Image 1 (tube, rainbow, N blue to C red):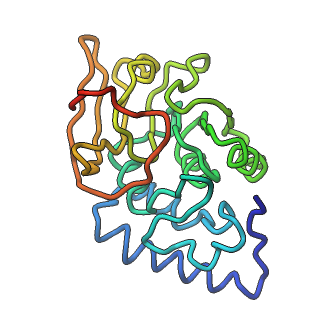
Image 2: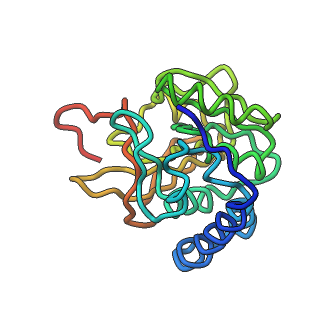
Length: 225
């Protein structure tokens, strides 16, 4: 998958579209963490997409990037990052790296990022475009497995919607750590946040938002959140 090479003559247009995304999508929808807004205002989303999708990089829609895969909505990513209450010292696990955009935004916010991608083509593209980000490690593997070797993590960002949250990911979260994800409940996606305590883990919904569906998280038959 060839990623976007942006010419100087188009840069001003992309900058304008990025500013419009911040003003019309993020700020009106409770993306209120100033650090998250600033990072998303700087990171060139078009650089993490196939070249043919660059003109719509900042549209408020899911974009097709691989077989049965789409990008997450910018506002959904922004809401998840905001609710994660990220700190500069944090070690973060990102589930669903896709083309690398969310990992690049996280790189500006936290100490270290381990980004997991299951699609080989997406993983290859993300690894290439994320090479300049010294605090990001891209790993290819099943999304639901995470990467326990680098845990425990201060925060886990599941950048999309899942049917079932596996215990394997909860186990990789440090005590006091936060986990955010879109949870699909009877066909409705609800963005949710949870925190692990010494006594257990629980999640609460904070917004109904469409989000990109991630593979490998199908609920067992009869499973209900």
